[in-house]
Image (spheres, rainbow, N blue to C red):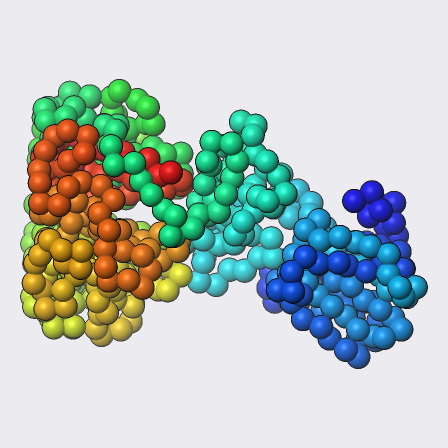
Length: 495
């Protein structure tokens, strides 16, 4: 690559306001061309391009273009979807040909791991992933300054490993980063207890009493809805004890603002604020970071079916961009959305009574918000299936389980699934509660694979569950499961 360094003549900085990103190019001297390894790397060829600036602009408005070459004599502009270092800049048979390429600078990656809206935001250098954070594009990994090719570099230092672990499109294999591929996803079947004491309930900081809901932040910290202790426990990675962030530390239950009557669903925002589904109090409470009491953000505290009321809420999801809350109501068989500071909600799914019709839900519990498709994945608990409901639509689409609500324990059936998660590849994961297992459905498939637990068998050893309620993944797709009647949270390593 020395030839690139000594051949630089000038730089162009072009900004296109339409796509909200800055593009900086460097040009070689004349007499150079770009040699690419695969035909698929050649994104397009355009003739009748009458200047170097024109070819540069063609590349600048195409987000996939990272490198181009241009011949003044032939007026041919070729644009490539790979970085210059992924090919070779070589001498050309034409003295009027040159190469231009997007220059990577630290400033262009300043948005890395900052919030974005995956439905509208675009960026040449970064990808807005399903967790609404800017991340490196596929097969690239952040090295602390810029995103680099996982093929071109070996990530063997601690700093590279840490950056790899933050990128959920990549996986650390012990010596280097590699892209996550759905067909190669595997989990160790032996669970590791990371919170609680197996088969022993209690209200001391090291114990749980029927843990129900889970949330996990970008640091790998767990937030556990400790249902029968009427509290939410914050559990740092590797810690022996939890810290109470909602409810009373001693497990006292109640209906006042400083209490919870139970705790079933939980989610945490990027500021450490905790949203708790207080099921028997028919409300969702916001416990701001460090607060000693909650603020009611959904429901009135009295069960009902009006738009400002909830009845046996079970699950909660939050849009990280807009702050909109989505709450599943098992008692009203519907999903409600609540705008920030709104006193009433809007029905976005169900609300037509319990049933198996496509316009109905049947005791919905866990929900997953996919902002990229503007849809909700819903654990349709009493119908033994998982459905996808596009926000604004009037009916659902089946994605797992039986369309008629029949229960079963085969690879295509479910038995009272309580929770659902979806990864960035569209794969679906289900807490198949009364089958005591976690099922993995590859994107587009209705045939599941058991990745944790043993079908239909309860137990308290590392291989079994006793009513797994909810599941979550960290940035490396390690699996966490709230094992309710074993009073613990289990971790299953992805490898």
